[in-house]
Image (cartoon, rainbow, N blue to C red; front, side, top):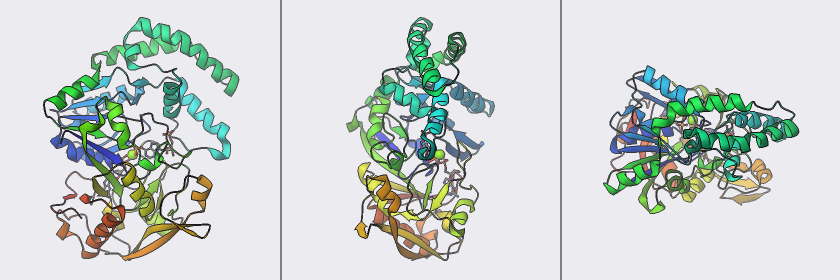
Length: 431
Ligand code: GDP
Ligand code: IMO
Ligand code: MG
C-alpha cells in the first residue's frame, strides 16, 4: 500500500493525529500536505501528551522520515518552537524535512487575518487568527514567499523588497494599521531561515524515492472535508490550497494521484465544530454539554482553546464527505463519549423548506434552515474504554458502530474508545 491518506470527514478535530500516530507504524514517511498551524493534532503516547500544529504526528517514531510538504503554510517561528518543545521532551526531530516550495506565514498574515475578521463583522468566519487564510491567498495571488526563498538571503531580500511595501500599503490604506519595518522582518526571518536551512529541500524527491523503493507513505490531513473551500460550508471554511481533502494530498506532497491507494476517513461518533457556520445537529442543551465535557479529553480547541460546538452525528454530511474523498476505510473516534447516553440520535436527512434533502445544500442560508431528521438508537450506558476487540463493546455500542458504517456507506476498520495509543479496536471484520 504505497500511499495512504488520512483525512478528517467532518469539521476538523476528528482525532486525525491520534489515528496517524497509530498508522505511522507501517509507514516509512509521514507527511503533512496542507494547511498550517491552524491545525492542532493531539497525540498521547509513552512520552505524554503532545499538541502538534505543523510537525507530522509520525515524529515519535525515530526511524521514520517526517515531511512538511509543499502544500503546507509554514510559520517558521511556530515550527521552531514546536521543534524546540519536542527536542526538550526527548523527541528527536533529526529526520524532519521541510519542502523548499512550502509557503511562509509572514508577520503581516496573522495581522491581516484578525483585521479581516473585524471587517467582516457579523459574517466573521471565526478563524484561528493564525494568518493561514491570508498566506494561501498570497500564494494564489502570486505574492507568496516560499521556504526556498528564505534559505537564500539575497533572493529573500529581493522578494521582500517587492512584497513588503505592497503589504504595508494594504495594511495602512485598507486597514489603517501600522506598516511593518523591512529591517525587522528581514533580520528576524533570516535568523529563522538560518536555523531551518538544514531541513529545507525538495521533499517531493524524498517522497518519490521512498515510493520507488516500495515503502509506505502516510499523508496526514488537516481540518475536515466540511471545512474545505469547495466541498465545505463555504464561506465558513478554511483557505488551504491545496485542499485538505484526499484530492489535495498528492499535490501537497508532490507525488501523483495514482500513488494513493488508500484513504482513511476519520469521523467522530458525533459532530463538533469550532468557529462559525451551519451545523444542523448542534445541541445547545444539556446533551450538548455532556458531549463537550464527557471523558478524559473535553471538546476544547487544541489550537485556540475555544470550546467546540457539539451535536449528534450527521450522516448526511458524513456520507457526502466519504463520497467526495473516496474514503475507503473509516476510523470512528471518541465512541466512549457516548457511554452515558440512554439513547442517541443520528441525523439521516435534512428537511429544508419542507423538502427532504439527502446531500448538503450549497447555499449557506438554506443550510442554516436545515432541520435534522433523526433516527433514534439505544444507548449502552456502560464503559467502552477498555474494549480492544469489537466483541468487547457493549451490544448497543456494536449496533451503533454498525449503523454508522451503513450510513456513511464505507467500512469501519478502526474504532477508538479513548485518547491513549492502546485504546483502540482494529477490526478483523470491518463493519
Ligand atoms: P485532530 O485535529 O483531528 O488531530 O484532533 P484533535 O487532537 O484536535 O482533537 C481530538 C481530541 O480527541 C484530542 O483531545 C484527542 O486526545 C482526543 N481523542 C482522540 N481519540 C479519542 C477517543 O477515542 N476518545 C476520547 N475520549 N478522546 C479521543
Ligand atoms: P485540525 O487539523 C477545527 C476552522 C476555524 C474556522 C475556520 C477557518 O486540528 O482538525 P482558519 O484559521 O483556518 O482560516 O479558520 O476553520 N479550523 C479548524 N477547526 N480543526 C482544525 O484543524 C481547524 N482548522 C481551521 O475554527 O472555523
Ligand atoms: Mg485539531
